[in-house]
Image 1 (cartoon, rainbow, N blue to C red):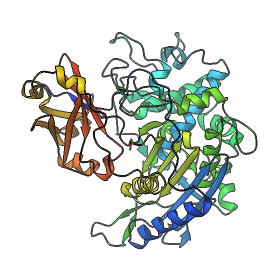
Image 2: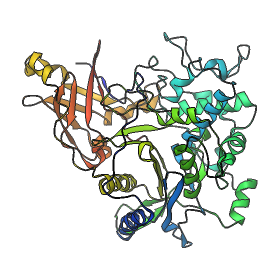
Image 3: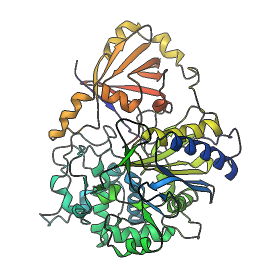
Image 4: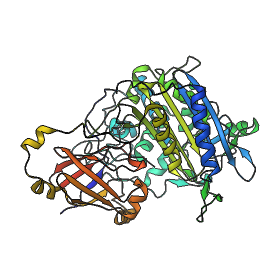
Length: 515
């Protein structure tokens, strides 16, 4: 049997939001403080992380912000939501998305469905950057880049570097731009280079270096005065001003191999693709951004970086492979929980630092958290426990989405189940360079079991990421299965959908964390 990939596949449009869900208890400053204090004091005391910062927004107010533990252990500097300058990682993509939509509002970009190459290089510019469209039926559009449906391969080497290796001119990184490996809209597969191309587009169309455009047109209107895309350059004028005013850069840490409460500073590396992961910010500034996102683009000061209709586009699902699965928005990735709560979020995992922005548009709630360790379970755990505490989201409910009509008319299970069996590999694995060798370590196999059951067995490396080595699937409809033994990492992922293709099945799982 051929080896179809495990997919994060998202096609079609479904912009409808979830309905508002009444919380079990009112979300107030006092409740959030009590919950957050208990959580972060425990994980710090247990030696899981050195420090953390948090900002929580309800409606048009930051109802709680706090720092816990230390942002730098050697100097004893405490984590501070106003003063700790942190690497936002891929959360930066939300700001690049904002810039692209600004150019749409200004008429500089006519339509998001326009071919991206039309904006990346003048036809007569033979040295300019272009996406290789000639081998495919359909050209890559701006929207394909926004939704990661461009078909671009992933590439890890060269995406991070030391401060002296960072080049503001994103174009210099395109000498080794990844190739397209599939046609557009086949599936949504995250690549660093989708947003990198859009950032270069912003710079080229405006004639302004990317960090400067972002400062003047995105960060300043939202009063994000402690945020910059030049944080890697400690001699930058804004950076020097922030430091002189009492701000400090956070130190990333890795827990030592022997565990315990021992940490070592991580290597000081930065995202070389600034539009993808170059933002330095504070929890307080991220609170200001969340207020604008939840209030139609208007900041607390009454200014806006985007018109309301384009903020709505960022908050709405733009692609999904099946109505039951999670989708992708412009910039954000969607998670739909069992009881109707809908989260859109983005994570930013750097060297010894990890962050997450999580918005719940229907609940008018926003959360930004960061901590300086490489333990992803801590940020995941905070969100999951908060949803359980305030909304009762915990164990998955019964199979109330069972399609009875399908089972009345379907073929016997044995004849159908054999089609699903075989080996699968993740789609976000480089295919066009030497890095493709890692796919050998990222294999999953499906074996049919008793009536309507499949067992998905994960390799060691995949099991670390998903928090389990075995996932049990129960058939609920045509090519649709439900996860019946979710690990903590999988509690928000309820379904697996198999798409029939000429080469076998594609397994769609919705969107898992993008690192």
